[in-house]
Length: 338
Image (tube, rainbow, N blue to C red):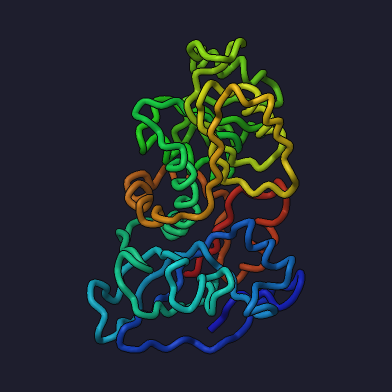
């Protein structure tokens, strides 16, 4: 079979490798789609992940169809469409340094259990949408970190895939009003399509003033200036100026969730924010959310479809990886295997 493999620093190839075989407790899955993530570009840049340095198989945002089932497996059948918990594989993280990667034609799930490594989904969910399950679980965890009360008001900075996923999760979890802040008009248009209540172009508008218009002014506290009555903020942009902007306007005891990867240090003046008693929470991965988000994807396929900007056939997977790594060229690339 073919597999997309990092073969050295800055090098990624599609190679012929052995097709996996299954035992009585395993299932074989024909891969149907896998999204490209920013992490893939990092894996390529550093030459892969030990212990498979120089031979790291890519693809950690997968979806596929079961094509063979071991005799001792229950609850799964040939033909089932499935999404994956890539962190629950017994042979390492799928597509992130484990023995296998979702950008292969086949993947074996050892000791397969429904609800553990795989979740069956309806067959009418398009493959490129099904492949969003993993990144949308990341977004759901970021929103869960806010611990929103019913009727909360939320602001999401960054309208990339994680930011858009955060919008959908916030609305699904009962947020009353969700605002998205970005500098790209096309991304802001997409945010409205997936369900944002309002958008703010921070290159053209005063974010704080606009949020006060949208969310009202926070009640009395130690803070003397007018501040938006926003309960939770999500930094899905990863730009230091976003943190500076948020901390300069948070109301007393607001919560900030940071799923974004910041590639440079972010200065924080603790003296300046002391009176806000702001709660800053980092968000990494999806401890419990991988299949929590699946039902919302199934129920809102058309909205989640808006997140996918480019669908690339498997024969052109290397081109798709380059496209995803080119700044401004694409928002979300999904490789689809026919």
